[in-house]
Amino acid sequence: MKADFGWPAILRLGLVQAALGAVVVLTTSTLNRVMVVELALPAMLPGGLVALHYVLQVLRPRMGHGSDRGQRRTPWIVGGMAMLGAGGFGAACATAWMASDPVAGIVAAVLAFAVLGVGVSAAGTSLLVLLAQRVAASQRAAAATTVWLMMIGGFVVTAGIAGALLDPFSPARLVAVSGVVSLVAFAVACAAMAGLEGRVGARRADAVSPDADADADATATRAEATRFRDALVQVWAEPAARRFTLFVFVSMLAYSAQDLILEPFAGSAMGFTPGESTSLSGTQHAGVLLGMAAAALAGRGRNGRRFGSLRTWQVGGCLVSAAALLGLVAAGVVGASWPFKANVFLLGAANGAFSIAAIASMMALAGEGRASREGVRMGLWGAAQAVAFGLGGLAGAAASDLARLFIGTPGLAYATVFAAEAALFVVAAGLAGKVGGAPAVRAVPLGIGEKPA
Image 1 (cartoon, rainbow, N blue to C red):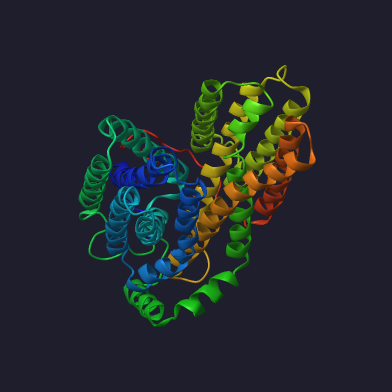
Image 2 (cartoon, rainbow, N blue to C red):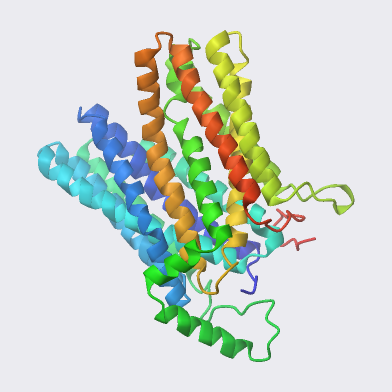
């Protein structure tokens, strides 16, 4: 489709992503703590609820197909945000209910987290498709970075404000704060999407037929007539889409498996205090931001030279991630003398670089292959990412428990798990190298209103 979104439109989509992140972070992080600390419930409960919201995201391809059939993304984004807000508020109400009736509260929480997962699937998938269709190829990496940074900003702002408003804690206050966050997030999303997509989808920029409008109408009619199962089979039959799905799954499995074990490793093997191990998250995320910025700005060099294709950044990011994880293996063997913080920073930078390159490639590949299947492709890749995240956290924690059971030294036990994650990143790099070459990273303007070089 015609790439007609400039920076104002990209920033508006970033606001939607920030609103989405605001609801999700309150639901998956704050409620997690309340269940475990204030309500003294087993940690498996919030873990299972968060996993449920990931599992429900297998619906992403179906949601994408729905938006393909109508050739409109806005209703799915706004509708998804409505469900997301309802799920987030419902989860807070269910958590408060657990204080007086645990069984009823848990049943309500299961329903709320299921609605949350469906809302994320609908809104998140269509938002990425809209970005892929309407952002110029030269701006995709920078657009992806901007949107993801705004989502992280939504995390930070919501966590800070909601955290201040929740003290002194009470179940009623939790429900009130969650309700306000959900309402504000929905209002922001509606305001950002108002009139953004336009009444009619843009035409293909590369259409050369004088009957381009008729061709587009015929394509839309065929998309409406195609059943979801047939559309999914058609997309899976495309080699590039299939390989990219496998790449997303394997790379995100390796990416997420480290989340739940890095801080315990720092404490048990490296002698970090709770405060020091918590600060590692800031070190790692600083590296992630640097890696994202590097990938987004990769096209800016002297005399307009490019610094590698998206595929190069994916492969390189995965290989450097594997090397950084092998550094953590060495840390488990050597101990406190290893430059551990620098190692964690490098891991974050490599993760950030490959993830932004992967998102930009995702946007580029969404329109390749059979027409009017962008939503199904994006949904397929989003589902692969969600399932990998759900499995990765649980698998990493379980593998570390098993390793400690059979290996007496904590450092060596964790090192075994990090080595397995490094192997996954090497496999992911091989898969990325086989995906059809995405357009090279061109000059990527970050300044608002600046035109592509």
